[in-house]
Length: 93
Image (cartoon, rainbow, N blue to C red; front, top):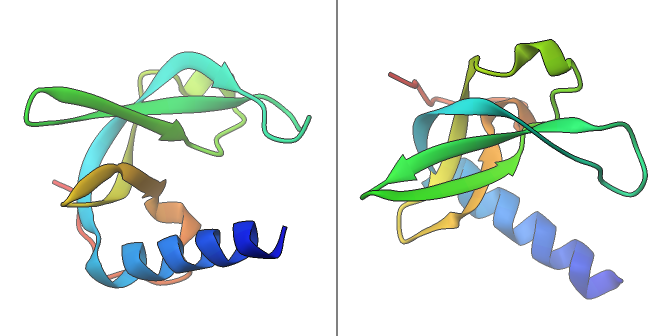
């Protein structure tokens, strides 16, 4: 459990300081984390490949809206919604 926690913290620190911002689209697909309420999944595209993640958006009527996502340029599968960070200098265009 401790290693899992360290892995998450490490990823968040790298994303916060080395991440790249991109606009993503909220899909109609939902996910549940640890039995909590359903949240929308987001998709974004890098070099023709689609990546996805948990948006933490519980309002299912927001499907189709855009949100800003931060990802690692060298590993886009590591990504988080910009809203996951307290502060950020990211601007999504």
